[in-house]
Length: 394
Ligand SMILES: Cc1ncc(COP(=O)(O)O)c(C=O)c1O
Image (cartoon, rainbow, N blue to C red; front, top):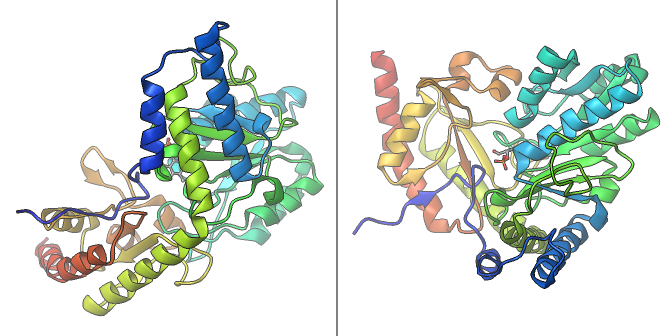
């Protein structure tokens, strides 16, 4: 019998929590469009609004601030394009958007699109070797000409190397100038404490499938005062900002997962953090000449992320060797037309193209066990040996 696959790619997507599956499947069996006026519609509306209230309570926001979307990518697009269009319509001088070099493509690509088609001036602030943004440079960019800034976007936690960003500090500086701040908290909710009200941000993206909910449901939590221009027009759902029939069953599953993930966050961070530390220590002890990317253990990082560089190896080849040994992980960076691309995050952290292509991301989750770590540790040595031998032959 094949031993169980070791899944260490929870930052890509994580298994649904049993409570979320239960809530979602019960709802799937029922009918009702939450916009219909009859009893079935009213029932669907009731569970939709209860879901909104549960998510708001878990995240420290008001129910009216939760806008349901299809996930993180849509929430990021809505925040950036929606805020840019609305703020520029109020004042045409607001053409600048400030962000960072280490954002996810769900932020970077809408920004490039706004620059290429809408005349936005995008300024990406750099980071240090651990992936933490240069706060002084961000402050200087804000203060250079605050009246010209439409919106600022800084991720709460980096998806590749796990670095936490000083989001509240930026929100405090931006607030002095009345500039709205968006944060992509897709990797943060359930992993570290996230409270919308006290964070000071104006908009926050999250998604179900990274925290035990289904793929296809997410939200943008957004202050009522921040005007957004809609991207999708139609039936006027979600206070006219995001039209489309509500995916009630997915939203119910999403709400159950958010509630659980936030309730268990502290215990999760301790348990998974210990497993992650053990994983890093043992992999570094087993394979010579390797190092952890991002902040050192115990410093401003996600508890479940371990991205490790294996110099002399091509990350993609190593990933396939581990896959053959039953261990699933990620390189973190995209593969374009079959050609491995160096991660823009690692390049922004000052690594060379070759260094950046030699890393693998191991991300842990609720289902990770000590045996999973042992299986990776047993598999990694021979895989790196083969990967390095193949690298030498090229
Ligand atoms: C930081 C970050 N933002 C946004 C996304 C996109 O979220 P979704 O898959 O829900 O569209 C991801 C997913 O990988 C992510 O890690």
